[in-house]
Image (tube, rainbow, N blue to C red; front, side, top):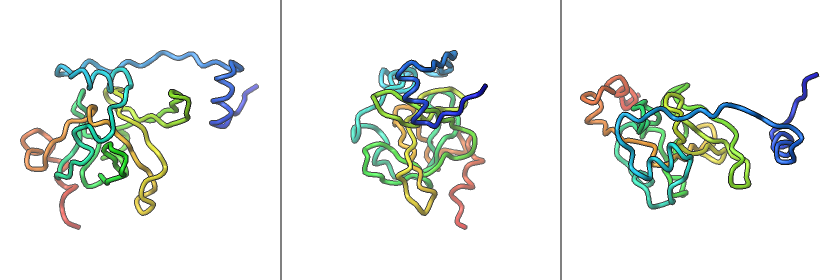
Length: 169
């Protein structure tokens, strides 16, 4: 017999112990470069940096944002917007499937966590309060999980294929 649970029902059932979910925790990959304490806290431990006190919340340069652990391109400045939240916000990832999502019940609330598909690093959360014209999503991402590659440096850093994102249409 199979059971179907809605998201809320599943959360309540888990909290009440009616059902349990055992799974092997996926660890993030070993970083290619040493992480700062904040990067370790965010990417490995699943933490959140303070709003308005992080590198990219008000960053407006053209370029791409890559996974600080694997170097995988995750987001483009062409999809970045000011959400007023104090964290960098994007309407979508740079491509599918560079990120993965999962339910997050930490902090006493139901959210959708965003992780890097390659490194399994915690990036932030996705919400449905983004700009309606672009699909309504807001990927609220911790700056500590990202490395910014300016448009002018993309070719020399091996990201030349992504320059097409900045061509006028």
